[in-house]
Image (cartoon, rainbow, N blue to C red; front, top):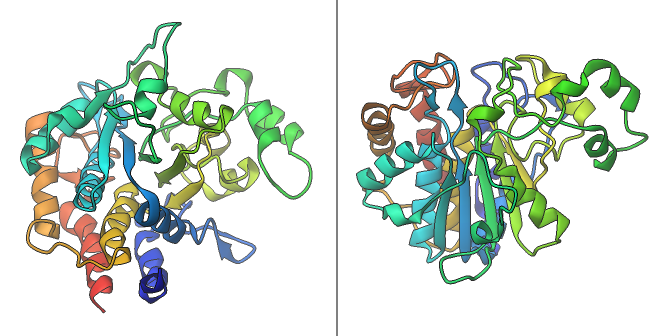
Length: 340
C-alpha cells in the first residue's frame, strides 16, 4: 500500500516504546538496535491487508489484589482495536477467562458492542478440550489473525530454548543453571510468582496454530517480557532486557509472527487501532475514540468491573502505576502524529 510509506512509523515506535516504569524490554538495545523494530508496522500492514476474522486475547489477573482481578492494561486497548477492526469490516471475537470477562462485558456495554463477541476460555480445560472453536468464528470459518494483548504466557523449557532461532548454539547450560525445573513452563507475574491457578491456558491456541501450521497470523503485544509473543526473542537476550523481577524465569516461551514491544501494552494496541484506517485510506475516527473517551472507558472498567492497576493492585483508574493523564498522553501522541 502506497500510503504505508507515508505513515509516521518511526515516531509511533518512539512513542509506544517509552519506558516510564523502567521494565527494560521496550527500550533495550541489542548491538545498538531495538528489539523487533519493524513489528508494529508489519503487524499493522498484515491486519490492514487481510484481516477478516480476528480474535483478540486479553486479561491479566493480578493475584495479590483483594480479591484477585484483571488489570487495567489490556482490555481497554483490546476494545479500542476491536472497534477499529469492526469499522473496517472484520469479524472480531474477544477471548479471555473468568477474571477478564467482567472487564470486557463492562467495556462492551460502555461502547455499545455486543457481549456475544466475548468467548470465555476455561481456567481448567478438560482432558478432551478442543481448541478449534476458539480458532474460528460462529459460522465455523477460520480466523485470519489471533492477537494477544497483555496476556501472560508460560516460561521456557529446554525444548523451547532449542527451538528458538538464534546465531550459535542454544545456551542450555545457562538455562539449566538459572531456571529450576519447577519454574519451567509456568505462567509468572513480574515478581516471579506462579499464577497458573488464576490464568486460563490460552497459549494452547497459539501452540495449535504452530503445531498444525494453520494459516492464521499471530500477533503479540507486551511490555514486561512475560507475555505471549515474547518467545519471538531469544531467551538469553530477553532475560538481559527485562529489568524487573527474575528475568530468567518470567521470560515467556510463546512466540508470535509479529511481537510488538511497548512501555505499556495498551499503547501497542492503540497504535494499531490508529494505523489501520490510515492504511486503508480512511480517516481516524475523531468524535468517539478520543483520549477522553478512552479514559472514560477505563474509569468504567474500574468502577463497574473491579479492574485493578497491575502495579499497585488497587481498584483505581491508573494503568501500570501511571496516572490516567500520563497514560493517555501516549494515545494523544499517536493520534497527533497521524495528523502530521
